[in-house]
Image (cartoon, rainbow, N blue to C red; front, side, top):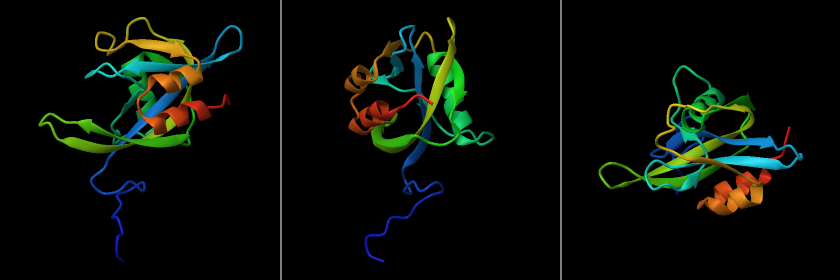
Length: 150
């Protein structure tokens, strides 16, 4: 079959790094939807918490664990994906690694004052449209705008 792309487990093309992430959200005291973003460690860009799969955990729990480590949030995670997006990240040798992030919704119930990556990241709450404007990836921006409270 001409032009076929080999895929690894989960439908992600071979050679593309699979990651899992969350779109953390809550409603404020006025009932308005808010989305939490964190800064990336490298360039300080606004992103959502994400990370590599954990062999001993299902994808949604891997995503929740990264949200705890990167943003210091705990809450109720959806077990089915909301969306996904692609991006390229620079690795240690200066080359680009293509990545696919599968996103899960996380209704935030609590935020920690101290969390594992507190010294490496900032976090901030935004309304969804503002959050979408803060991220540089158009696919991620669309996913943020599509989040609906459950």
